[in-house]
Image 1: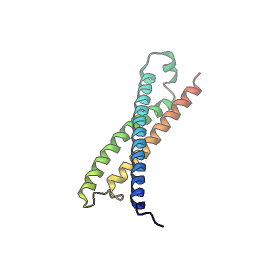
Image 2: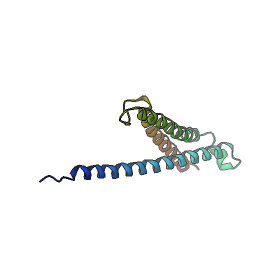
Image 3: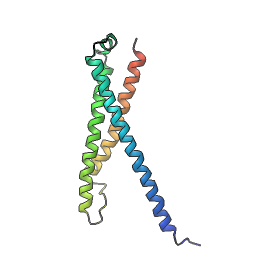
Image 4: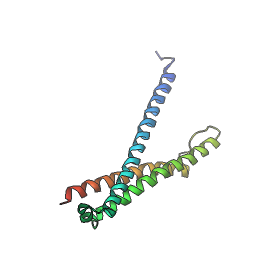
Length: 135
């Protein structure tokens, strides 16, 4: 026998899953922002620091990768929110107030979200390799 409340239960389940996704992606964005700023701080410390350890690392390409990755992560984080703002405006212009997943702004938002994760991961991996290989 069909449950008359099945549709409502499915809707509630979907809302819970979407809420969890919203929470997780928000936390992921926060962490990426912290990683990005941390990578930039490490880059500037190594590049312009007076310590002998910093001076010994300056010439390594990994240092540049750390700096570029940090800057990219922070910039892409900002870009994601900017594109999201425009995607929301576009959705509100629709009669159904739903996102157009084929929209340029929606696609750019998704791409920025993915790329900022990649930038943070590359920067963090470069930092680990730099520290492991340091004498």
